[in-house]
Amino acid sequence: MNTSKIIVANWKSNKTVHEAMVWLDAFSHLLSGESTVANLCRSNKHQIVLALPAPYLLLGLDIVKAYSFVKLAAQNVSMFGDGSYTGEVSAHALSDIVSYSLVGHSERRRWFGEDGTQIQAKVDLLIHAGITPIVCVRSIEDARMLILTQEMYIAYEPDESIGSGQNAPLSQVTSIATQVEGAGGFIYGGSVSLANVSDYTSDAHVNGVLVGRASLDPQDFYNLTEAALL
Ligand code: PGA
Image (tube, rainbow, N blue to C red; front, side):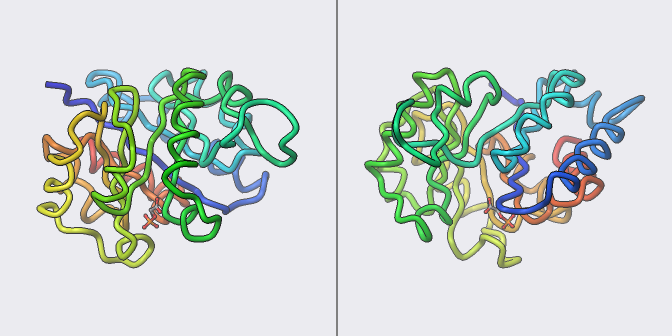
């Protein structure tokens, strides 16, 4: 059984360049020396994935180089390939930089009208570019719209749990997990905190967590990651 976990930080649309640099420096420092988190990641093949706003992804390359268990993720990707699509970032363009990309986050579905067809197009382009999609679903119905393959992760994020402080009960999460077999991994997101993270990461059905608000401070995110992996 694969017991390694991924802990994903989703900064959403937050931070200036300077604030991003301060966060990355502080987090890098926390991982140095005899860091518990670094030791746990190295010995159990856990990964820490940083989903930064696109302009800051290049700033993350130093921490990725220093710590092989840290990976970068895009928060979104174009539904088209390279070409005349002003303002979009293609999977091909991201392929030298990131290992993962979020797709179909509930906020993209709500504010940008993303639907199942667009999300599937993005998934296909990412897989073709060698990037692992982390496809966010709000329900089992969203998951059923997708062609599930081993090359993707599913992130279950019920709308009512995102940013609300009301994390979903583990029983609800595992019930969805058992219905999306076919994906390469299953993670949970929605008000994940230091207090509740280990409920999810200690369950064999759950391969990790997607963390929004609690990832915005480097020390908080480090502490959460430690609690998740201990
Ligand atoms: P939250 O966000 O942890 O702030 O609830 C999670 C997400 O939307 O990915």
